[in-house]
Length: 279
Image 1: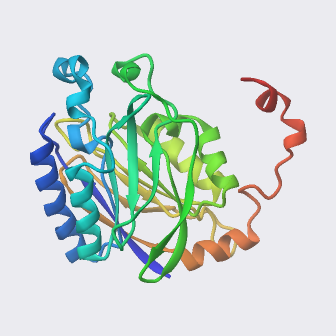
Image 2 (image 1 turned 90 degrees about the vertical axis):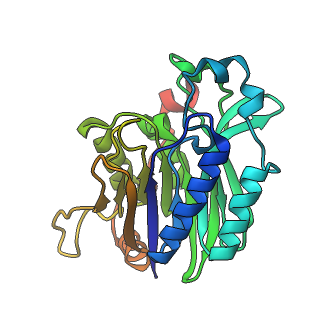
Image 3 (image 1 turned 180 degrees about the vertical axis):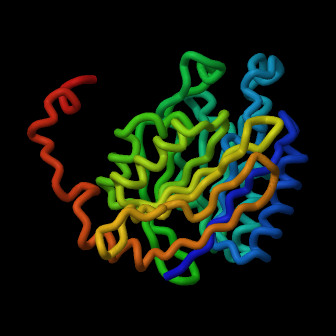
């Protein structure tokens, strides 16, 4: 079971949802031509992660959308037309307030989950946002079979609990829309999440000049059959705009998970007093 993931490391038009819709759909078509089965956008694509823009801060209702918006409906139609899955990101309108969200649309054009960023950055412009309260894993149908997919968004990456929650739900692929400068430390966090979870991780960031690209896919298999360390990186982008395609061998990942010791196999929750009792 080999699938192809397309990381859309592309420049957004701040607060120009119409332009972002058109550009995003055009890039979905380009990714499908390249063989993509799953397409991942960077964080909050509909507004270009323009949280510092005073126009957004003063009137977020104008820019926040829900699943019934023309923007989301258009991506659902595109996913169905191209027979691909699309992880589309947006400033979501909810009864509680605006959320930083990603909806995973399957190859039939149906939303299988909407994840709302749990670890919003309250120390920054994300103070505008309402945090989510759960991590979600769902089975995604592809042309080659089903796999368990979950999501984190940007700052979620910096908390081991995020990936652990997904691991406990038997996640196989974690999608990570991103919008921040990336260095070796932040990339090491993602690599660590892939290693300890025995799950593939696909992260898409904005390129220069908005941020610095470096979108990446880890396949989740840290060792080969001989027990020797191997490179988990399947694709690593530079700082430039583009589509970055990665192959993932899900069958090999499943075999690896059967005989290796990480993930949730040898946890001892009864000893994790601080984690369990501390709110």
